[in-house]
Figure (tube, rainbow, N blue to C red):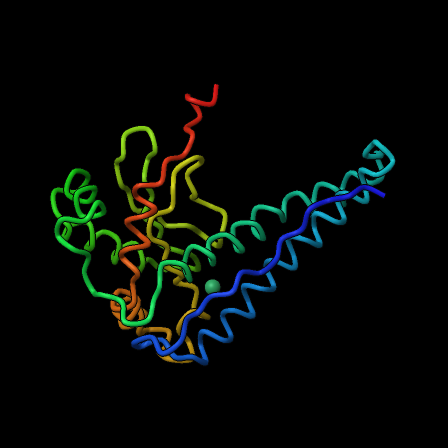
Amino acid sequence: MLQTMAYNPKQFNLSALQGISDKTLEMHFKLYEGYVKSVNELNEKITEMLKDGTVDQDEFPAYSELNRRLGFEYNGMVLHEYYFGNLKKQGTGAPASDSDFVKGAEKSFGNYDLWKTDFVGVGKMRGVGWAVCYRDPHNGMLSNHWITLHEIGNVSGFIPILVMDVWEHAFILDYAPADRAKYIEAFFSNINWQRVDERVRAELITPSEAA
Ligand SMILES: [Fe+2]
């Protein structure tokens, strides 16, 4: 039997946030664990198909479908880890003015307020998805992106710096669907800006360096 690795759900010590209830968080952690489980199941099924060393023609439709689902489940897992990871109890609404994040926002948008206007605007876009602030590891530029579902719109190799879930499940127990703006405000009051700064400083191997 082939030995393969599996993912374990991470634990997040989050409760008593401002404007995001513990009930929402508990439900959300369970949803996240569902993505981890689905990633493991998909990988197991693909491994099983590969076991005889070939993907038979009659296996190909099922094999293709399993692979198509990977993008949804993997990004569903990873984006939730970034999201929970950039929240904390007693977060601060705004980052320190001399933080690496603010310096990056100033270089990329002119000032923090304009960066925030853009990020909040992306978060209010109609549809099911995420707002993600990415850092380009080549030049340090920050840019905000709308991600449809979990997998459409992510930029390869860019580093997620701040990740905000705007699927309705992220706030429906606390706010009406039309009140997404209130949830976004609550999200901002719980941001772990220290963690965001660590992500800004993270050194990753860029594609060109790896070549
Ligand atoms: Fe979510």
